[in-house]
Structure formats: structure tokens, C-alpha cells
Length: 105
Image (cartoon, rainbow, N blue to C red; front, side):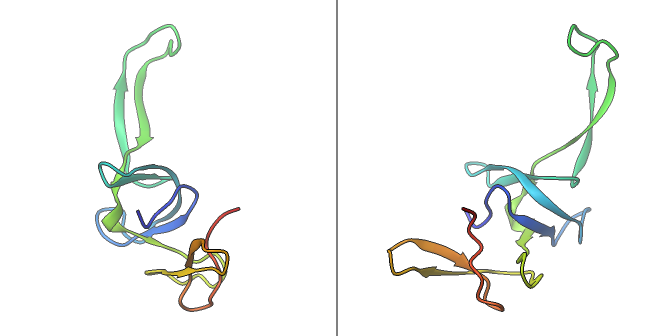
């Protein structure tokens, strides 16, 4: 997948258009990702031992990866990223505008 956990992304389609957030979780099989502070849904919970109050909770729901675009943390460029192969043989994502490597250590 072109989006990984920890990436900074912007929503490019849907009801949450132009919202930015960090990817919290990725589901490759369903082609979806959970983004921080994006795509809130209401979940009705009954009172139980762990949640004595119960009530209506707001949680982040997964959003389709096709509606997300990666943001370069160095130059703030939004869009597709290029993949290059380093001298050691490892492939990494690179920003086409500034040339910075987007992989986390």
C-alpha cells in the first residue's frame, strides 16, 4: 500500500475533504486506514464493568485509502510520491518536489 502507519495525510475526497491527520492504523486487505481526527462516527455503548456510564461515543472509523494523499513533512507537498532504490538495495518513498526520503527509521 502507498500509505503507512505514522504518515501525515490529507483527505482529498468525501465528507471530510481537506482535513489533515496522522495514520493510526492500516488495513491492507480492505484497503482502508484509520486517520486521527477524521471520519468520526457515533457508537452506542451499553454500561458494563469497564464502561459504567455507557452512552454515545465518538470514534474514528476507517476511510478508504483512495481518498487519502500523503503529505511531505519537509516541504508540505501533497500528492503522489516516487519510489527509488538506494545503493544498499532498499526501496524507499521519496518526495518528487524536495527529494527527501519519507521512510521512518
